[in-house]
Amino acid sequence: MRSNLLARTLVGVTAVVALSVGSLATAGTSFAASQPAARSAVSAQTAGILSNNLGLSTERAKNWQCRLRDNGYDPGPINGILGTESWRAAQTMFNDLGLRTGPADGDPTTNTIAPLQRYLNLFGYGLVVDGNAGPLTKVAFSDFNSTGC
Image (cartoon, rainbow, N blue to C red):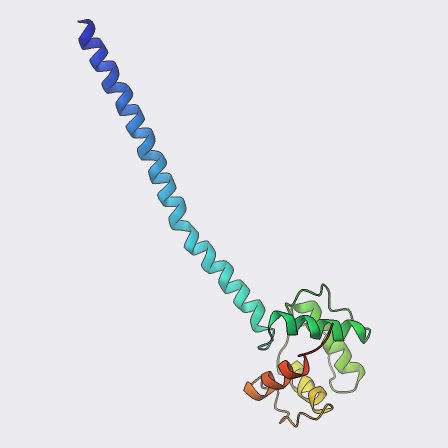
């Protein structure tokens, strides 16, 4: 009788351990499965932010932010990400230079790209001012920001 009780106890303990391990394994698997989705969301968000860099590397975007700051416009943190604050500073600078009119909303749309093209042309880039951040504009913007802070 005693061996029967011991056997049932061992079976019961083994079952509890197996269920616990199985639950942990399932929890671990479900958690691991959610990680790629989280990474995709972060990657998509980062890609969206970096697309506002108009092809600039982080280092060259920092140079642009330093140039804005050094000219008296606050681009926010010098972090190599051209976000709303950086574009608002650029728009304000373009407005002050007479290259753009309109509210400084921080959104790098055609109403920001065309003044950027005009600004780069002041330095001899010879861009067509069409408001399109195409390959020539991106190359000129990158070249312009190859040196800085």
